[in-house]
Length: 162
Image 1: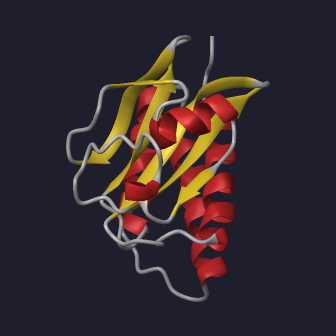
Image 2: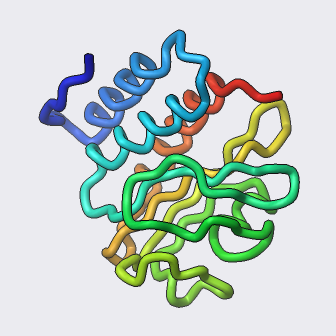
């Protein structure tokens, strides 16, 4: 059973605690939806000043909405469009300090002002993206990026593809 707990210590110690919790949540679970749902919930409860945490999954043509926490979201995103589609197409993490300045930004939640998107890659193949939005401009820094990339790597290794 999962218990909410206060996260104490340095940011690095807090991040290490969340990574440990993620490993415990997904250990021995083979259902992708269950793992993605728990991962989005864990991030939503841990990260401060975020209004959307979730996943878009690549169906071979475009990104399709997966498990998330937050307001209802855009259902389909073409590769190369918006922050999610660009991160997926370029297969790289994108941190946007002000989404209103990002060319082609897709506004699903008007309250979002900054965003980080991490591609989920397994065996060289795109699985989808992990997307996190914040109402604060400049919410995500390099320490957040490193943590979230580790989080995505641990999660992606557990996903069953094919």
